[in-house]
Length: 413
Ligand SMILES: [Zn+2]
Image 1 (tube, rainbow, N blue to C red):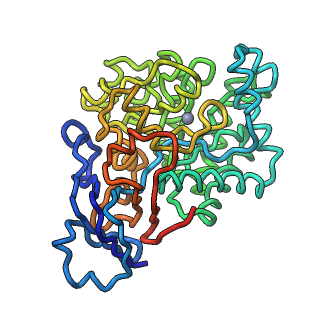
Image 2: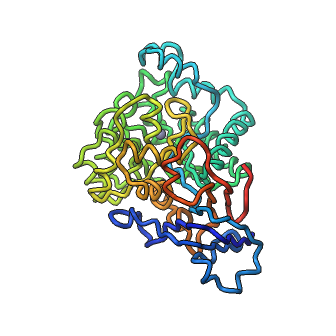
Image 3: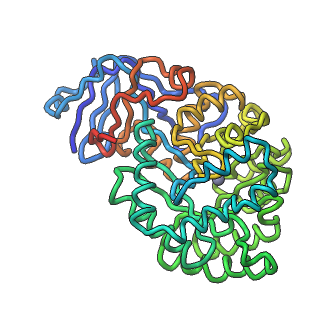
């Protein structure tokens, strides 16, 4: 589809070199004033100031941005968006002061979502998930990652990932699948941790790799989930089968996940609340990206957030994501995460916007394809209701997109 967007008050291009942004580059949004963007066959073919627009492009169908802000489509590089059912009851218990043990005894937690997934039909899961993805689109997200991890058996994990692939036929979004069989130890494996880790490493991963169901493998490396040793074994098996790596690291306690992420050179290590400066420097030296998930802290009613300012100061590339999930962060609104990353993570507005665009794209190995408005990239962009990019952080909690464009086509969520 061809399209010419004219009369943009401000274009945030996030243009730059082919690496994740750090230092001064993480504060540079590549702003063009009074800009235009041209797309042909779903790709960007020209971006710049409208006064420089070559006459040869002016025969495309036009869209008047009416002086508003244009940015790249946002990239949500960490979600658990495919799930069944609701854990609102668990939320109510939690805020009324119930302990973790009481919630577990009432049938809550990841195992509750695993039961709901098992009992739901494919159509039921797809319908619920498509609604979530449309809410994400309305908030400006045009690329997202979705993890499995509510299956907790080979059969259900493979089913989750096949449904992820199916979603692409229902929603105009780039979707990246991550296998996360090691999300929680299932009830039926309580007495045989070793057996479950072996199941993930030796049965699930080969199945997932053989069917090419996922680009990444992720592990919940945490006290109460999987140990550093178990996580290493699973991630090494994944790498041996050609999967790229991610890790849920140091969210609740300093459990060594960030250190392991650095040792393995993961694409990204996510959460990082309890990571030390040394750990984060090791992560930087390994070429990884640190992903902040401030919505989860909000959803848990916590006052501690990942040390975003320290991460940027030491030169670790930072991305920001929603962690959309049914347990502790049921929120599709990625711009809200920008606000939280600024207020509680110490990022500048510019760093946070880079964190949901080009750095998030790199956290999915899609830095060549999405995350910035540059010639050759996908025609995914957002026209906002306003012209000042700082409004994305400043005005929070409601969708503020005016028009969302995917592959050069205006979409209606
Ligand atoms: Zn997560």
